Image (cartoon, one colour):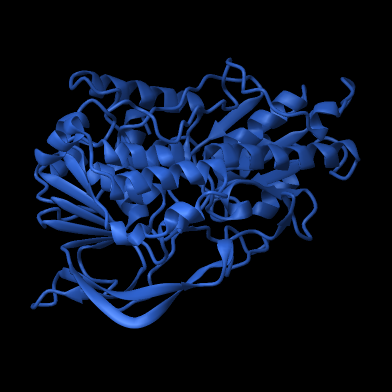
Length: 484
């Protein structure tokens, strides 16, 4: 399979390569005097939002210095721990005006008010580190996992390394129809030999080699027109070696006329779904599907109602789905139960119904219902000098291009405020003040040069197996390798 997916071409704050050409924006026209002080800016979170924010700040202000704080020992957030291992890695380099400080938990090791006192501006870009729960009976049964934890397990997120999902069942059900759901389905069904040369963890690869999962159902509350995955992810699933798609043509009845006026990306996606569901495959594709030992399917108009236990109550045995119908028009449609239900036998349930941000510090406003920091164009409401970008700003939606644009807009707002004199005047100590606080609390950050040592070790361990790297999973082992 050609490596692809979310095209995480990441022009981080460290690259020597040029970012993609951007539209003319207000920050492009901001002029900063070379006599001005050096703005000390702090970014919390080293995933795509954090790096894109920092990259834009450094590009548009020749004197700005950016420090990035990350709770993990290693950088890159979702790019390292969230992108499927059969998809490409991130390219990084260095910048003299940026520093990385890993293993620092903002809100615990250092507070946001302490960061605000040390920097001219603080940008919160820490993403969505939790998941939406199903809120249904049986959700706590063994064999039920969040897709976020499952992705973290096969991608080597330290907190998920002990997940150990039981893959001895025949059928898995994924709740949700977004890109993450298709990523998880693809990893479950991909022949293990196709994953051997990726950076998937050895533990996950071993479990997948022993997997007995033959069928994966990807379940959504609404219909084909409302799926959240994109055409690239769908195309990969359709052509996944050793598998065949199972789609009910009745789900697509009347869809042809309804998609005529749809935006082009949505129309192309729907046309591919329609062809797959209703047309006979060509001879070559039919022959491939006839030999397939595994299958995947999309189940529409189904909402999870209860996870069903095995007779001894010790394991998931199925899921009860409420059959739904749509009400409303266009984008405002919602699913309502019809009163009928359907039981779907399975031994594994993966919930992919959304990620969720958490509050980081009592001093920072937070909307628990929306799971975001209240903001106006990235400016945190009622807290001057505090900004946010990425998922914690807008919610867990969109792809990498969305995050890039969003982060650039936050950076523009910050630079506009800096130019207008709305940020603190006079020098700020930056990391020197934070370093003293961390030292007094026994916190020793991991630097980018430390990460390079860990990176070299991972690459070395992967070479023997022909992998790009073998990820280090144990934080204590990482610290030992750094001589801590």
